[in-house]
Amino acid sequence: MMLFSVTRSLLRGAQRFDIHRNRDVHRWVAPTLRELRRRREKMGPEAALPRSSHSDWNYSAEIFAFGKRLQESFDANVLQQAFTHQSFIEQETRKQAAVGIEQPVLGVSDNRELIVQGEQLVAEYVEAFLLTALPRLPRQFIASVREALTSEAQLAHVSAHLGTKDIIMAAKFPIDDALLASTLKAIVAALQRSSGDERCFLFVRDFLCGQLNQHDLYEYLEIADPLRTLQEYCKERGLADPEPRLIGNVGRNTLLAAHQVGIYSDRKLLGTGYGESQTVAVEEAARDCLRQLFGTELHMKPVDFTLTLSDCAQHLTRRSASGKVEKRQ
Image 1 (cartoon, helix red, strand yellow):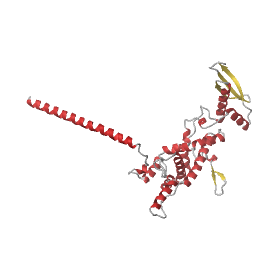
Image 2 (cartoon, rainbow, N blue to C red):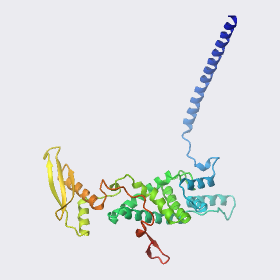
Image 3 (cartoon, one colour):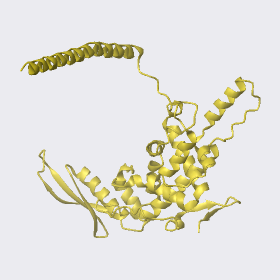
Image 4 (cartoon, rainbow, N blue to C red):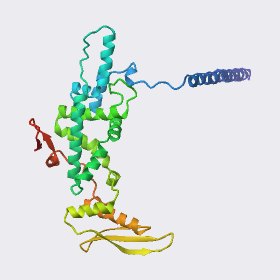
């Protein structure tokens, strides 16, 4: 019995010691954390630093990993040039000149030439894809969709999600949308030089034209006057002038009024629309007619994202050495 009593006493002492030790830790940890937080708030937010400022930065590994993530075969030198902007070259030249190097040698060129080439490739491939995937959509609206898909904001969005922000070599940081967009254009040109036209087209199709997936095309179209646009379209195609007719209405002269308007051309119904007034109903009917004529109905088949370069070849053009525009065979 005495042995058990001694054992219980020792265990109680050990428990009290652990409790006091834990309490002592908590007494000094909480005030310390509060003080560190107070000092951090007093100093303000930390300045944004580029990924290259970290000690584990390996630029060659980042360039290599970028191509592997996209499952593309890039020439390492050309890809590095695509990520190097003129401002970085000028900055490094000034740094070397400041330490007495009269003729600095950086071993890499800037991406101005690649940006110009990439911009032409992007515009050409996107337009050829749209003309093939949406054959009934007029060229003026094809141009509107192309401009939306190749806008600076859209290119910057795609570029940022491809992971270019940490690899871009530029004088200013953080990287803005203009640098992100121009870098993506340079990457397209670098891929064309490294792997050829086919891989370049597939890259543009997947990452730029793919933004159309599950989107209404009319998000990219600005049609201020649908009825007038419909009249011009019918006139160009040799169709009879569209004629709006009131099909039915309910709740006239009430807050819940609804009008149904149909638009006819040569006694054929082109489309219908509903609205709280006849003016709104005519506008909606004209939009419905345009959808029917352009092949962009709400129940349209999904855009074919399996088109290849050969499928779009008839809409591709290139400039020969003489400057003439030729069809790409």
